[in-house]
Each structure stands twice: as C-alpha cells, then as structure tokens.
Length: 320
Ligand code: CP
Image (tube, rainbow, N blue to C red; front, top):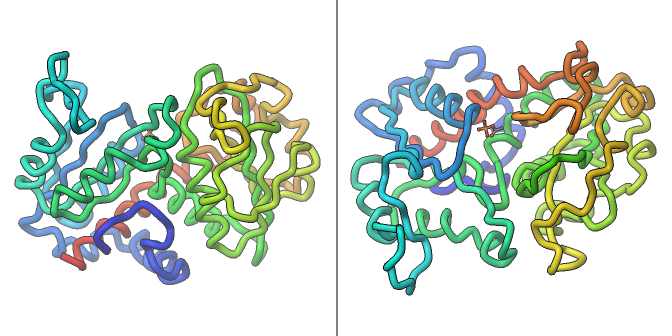
C-alpha cells in the first residue's frame, strides 16, 4: 500500500479486520518491520488522538518517529504554486516536501479543510502534493475531505460491539458553534457503505454529504425516525458540504439544539451504542448522560485508533 486515503486503499475489509484483531492481541508481533526505518508525522493542525495513537502504532512496529508541527517552530509554508512570496511565508511546500522526505521512509499528513473554496478542498491540494513530490508512501492522518484512520477505528469498534450480523448504524449531524470540516462524516459514510451494515444518515436539509462518500446511503431528515431501532448512533457536526448549493459551502446552516443527542432520541433505538470521534462539545453534540452512559463507546473507539494505525503502517512497511 503506497497511499492511504480511501477504504479501497486497504483491500478486502474482512482481511483488514482480522489483521486488526490479531494486532490487538499481539501489538508487537511486527516490531521487526520498522527496524532502521523512520515515520515522519506532519501536523498542519491541532490533534490529541491522532498525534498519540499514530506515534504509538509506529513504535509498535519498531519505527523511529519524527513529529513536525508546521505551525509551531517550522518556517511558515506557502502551499500554492505561482504565488509571489512577499508575505509572511518563508518556504514553499515544493521544496519542503522533498527535504522532509529525505529524512524518512513513510509520511503521515494531517491537514484540515479551508472551508472557503470547495473545489480546492475536495481536490486535496496539500495531501496530493505530498503524494506527488515526496517519493514516499503517504497516509492521511485526516485531510480536507477524509479521515480514514478514524473510520477504520470506528469500524473495528462496531465489529467488536455488534450483537447482530448486520447492525443498523445511524450517522447523525449535531449542532456545533464553529464551522467544521466534513472529513469525519465523509469517511464514516464511505467505510460503513463498504462494510456489512444498514447505514442511515440523518441531518437537517442542506447538509447533504458529497455523493463520492455517501453514495446511495439512505438519508432521513427526521432524526427521531432515523434513530428508530438503531444499534449504533454516530454523532458528528459538519458544515455545509455545498452539494445542493455551492455558495453555502463551509457555512453553518443550523444550530438547532433539538439535534443534540440526548436520552430522548436514544430511547427509540434498540439500546444503541453511542459513538463520536472526539473531541466532543458536551451538551452541544451529546448530553452528559448519553456520553457517560454504559452504552457510550467513545473511549474504546479512541483506543482503537492505535490499532487502525498499526494495521495501516504495517501494510505500508510491507510494501517498501
Ligand atoms: N478524532 C481525532 O482525530 O482526534 P484528534 O483531532 O485529537 O486527533
């Protein structure tokens, strides 16, 4: 595996899930693979889970790890070609990428959507330049439009806790005070469609996700109806994806607190598990009662980020 952005990069999911289960039992089984190899993790944005779990995964595999926070201590990077660099950006990504690549064997990149220019975000301009100019295997640690390490960890968690062969999984929009990217819901929808689950997506009108990710998944605008009989509820805020109205891309269209996941909605589920990728704003996205309930999976879900990253890095090391 040379790049990791979409579920299709991983090959058959049943094989990947078996590998995840094996690694969870024996985390250091493949420690020899990373000997005398280095993973460079580059963060353009803040992170807690991705930063820690990916470093742990790399160390499980015997890799050396170098972490670069681009916005803390590095030269400020220009990412667009053709710009006259007379402002505050001292270095261009086109020099920085091959330089960084010369110090490592694998590169993980974390970027966020700008939420201003839909075309630029969905073209994955930064990640694509790393893939094109580094000459190294590149994996997404969340990019403008996708968060595959999170979605893989989510799927591992659902498989571990599912009491039915084909559970009903509801992806629900929930309110948030700031405009957030669509990366997490995009990847969650993409990975759930590839897995054997009954996926229902629920959100206010105008928040339709890009068909590239959501495909023909069932969309239900009535949140209570969507929750009926659910086995897993996955909450997340996202800003307007600009699918039905491109001019609204990145905007907040609703702050309706009726969509906050509470005991009211969970009562119509089939004793559903609650999931969220974290960080989460309590009593905006989900009430204290729901996130603290015994059916909440937010902690095991975050813990599985180490497992998803170990599988992905193992696959990349095997392909070197
Ligand atoms: N879920 C997730 O990616 O968390 P961080 O932003 O803290 O890495």
